[in-house]
Length: 161
Image 1 (cartoon, rainbow, N blue to C red):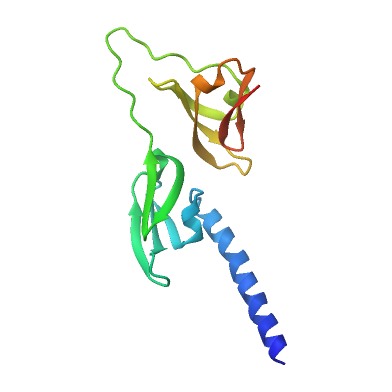
Image 2 (tube, one colour):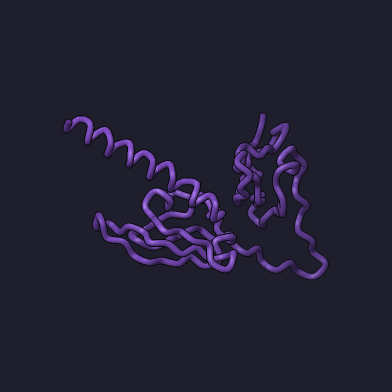
C-alpha cells in the first residue's frame, strides 16, 4: 500500500512538472537558466519579465523584475533571487561620413535578423532557434578568418570550416 502511495505521488509530481512547461511557453517567456529556479514568470508590457525567484536560502523566494529583456544577450539567470543578464554594448556613435561595416555573408542570414558588426569585430544578430524562439547571438569574426560560412545553429552563431 505504501509503495502505491509513493508511486501516486511521483506520478502527480511528473504531471505537475510536465504541466508547468507549457504554461511558461504559452506566455512567450524567453529561455534561460532562470526557469529552473523561478516560478510565476510573466512578460509584462511585452518587454519586462517578473518572477518569484529562489534565493540562496532554499525555499525562500523574492519577487524580481528584469526590465527590457529583449536587450539581453546570452543567458538570463537567477542570481540569489534577482534576474540578471548581460546587455548588448552600444556601439560608439560613428564619426562624420563613417559607416559601420556591413554584416558578412553567410547562411545565418536566412534565420537571423538585425545583423550588425561591432567596433571590436563581433557580429551580433537576433537568431531563430529550432523551436521558433528568437534569441540574441554573437560571434567574434576574428575567430572566423578563413571560414567557409557563418551559420546559425539553434540560436548560436558559429564559424563553419
